[in-house]
Amino acid sequence: MIKERIQHLRALMAENQMDAYIIPTSDFHESEYVGDYFKARKYMSGFTGSAGTLVVTLTEAGLWTDGRYFIQAARQLSDTGITLYKMGEEGVPSIEEFLLDKLQQNGTLGFDGRIINAKFGLKLKEKLQVKNIAIKYDKDLVDSLWTDRSALSKEPAFLLEEKYSGRSTADKLQDVRNEMKKSGATVHIITTLDDIAWLFNIRGNDITYNPVVLSYAVITLEHAYLFLDQDKLSVDIREKLSSDQVELKNYADIYTFVTSLSSQMSVLLDSKKVNYAIYKNLNPEINIIDAANPTVLFKAMKNPVEIENLRKAHIKDGVAFTKFMYWLKTQIGKIEITEISASDYLEDCRREQDGFIELSFDTICAYKANAAMMHYSANQDSNAVLKPEGLLLVDSGGQYYEGTTDITRTMALGEISDELKKHFTAVLRSMLNLADAKFLHGCIGMNLDILARGPIWDMNLDYKCGTGHGVGYLLNVHEAPNGFRWKKVPERDDGCVLEEGMVTTDEPGVYIEGSHGIRTENELVCHKGEKNEYGQFMYFEHITFAPIDLDAVDVSLMSPAEIKRLNDYHREVYEKISPYLTQEEKDWLKVYTRAVTL
Image (cartoon, rainbow, N blue to C red):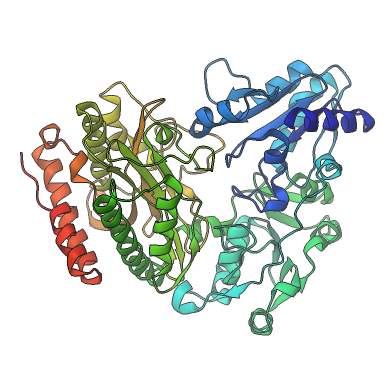
């Protein structure tokens, strides 16, 4: 099937005089996760991961993805004729290097300019000009092949009240305009869906698990324009936006609207996010101020109302997960449980919580060797039956009116080997070490990553991903610009200074292909600590509360300080979660949060 689709694509490429065609994992807004209409790369390659770019020439095809998906991609691309290119690995060419090597002089590269960001499009143009490669960006060739393609989402939007958002749209717009003035911009183009949702205090359901609305925004010093399918808006939303001086326009009108911008204007945009088609529609004489959207930082620094709401959301989520863990640990071996049925049970536990809206991502419920694939997703073919042995990794989260959650726990379903306990304990130590950090303001995630990665490196192991990512507020579970990783990765915008109010996950792991995967993940809120002659000190607060499976811990491998961190954390778990449990669940939790000693 995949081979046939590739051949059909090549026929269309030849018909349109294209020598290569790029299909990224993206929508018109450079979203990490996309709606069904935009899953062209999945359709053409069979690879289901959330990150990857397919490049097809008239004779070859390759797919580029990152370390989270190496194992999964290798399996899914088998027998498709598509070569896997492992991004960041030694000797692996970049997409630009591959195209420069494969395309002939005066050749033509094609792509849909609405799903390629401007920065990448301009980089391709620059790199390939040495061979005089032309670029055609006005053709969506996949649309001609994909006969049963889904329609664009028509899901309704909803307002996020200020008791949840903490700030009004009018105030947020004023902050954006203040930043525009500082940079000398008279117009600001925003195409990222989470930034728009945050700015206008609206949410939607156009991307599964990401409560956003397909939309664009243009902000001037006097006006605000919102481009979207207006049928998604209730009367209340229209009235609220009107009161905030927001003018509504049709979704696709952005492409003609930007052509009307005067050459005298200075336009603030992020070329890594604005798509190539919009960028090319701007008057070439316009002064482009290429910088991150001011909303990125504003959104990441949660306000006091948001933080207090997040604490409430995490209590609800912790209750749901603890009930799930109690059920799993007490029922394993007594009833049939599979990866899918366990995942479904956990979702049911979340749905019992007040204010729950939907999951924040597709639950990763991975047994034994399946957990070595960081973003494994069980299906009917791979769905493992759980037995009272080995480890089960569950990475999951929820969207609540009070915020977004993301938690991972790895649980022993029976007796496990000393090696598994060693790896589990190392991951536990890593997570607690980073969470306990105290540091001066000005540090970025790379300054702190070694606190988590150190115990893993001590075993001559590593995990091929970052240690943590930012989390949105009733928005994307992966949010820029904060994160933890040990080296700079150009495609990941997560290297900012850690500021007060930022929420970041702390999720080190060990992944052994063919054997097991272990991850323990909490969310941390960054706070200001003492300020003295040395500067402003910062620290983290745990906001995720659920037991860490003591059955998998080898306390002898922990220092007294690490044991204290674990016991202190588990004391908080019991205090915060137990009031919402049955007596049987409380008794069980008391055992699983007991103080441990050497």
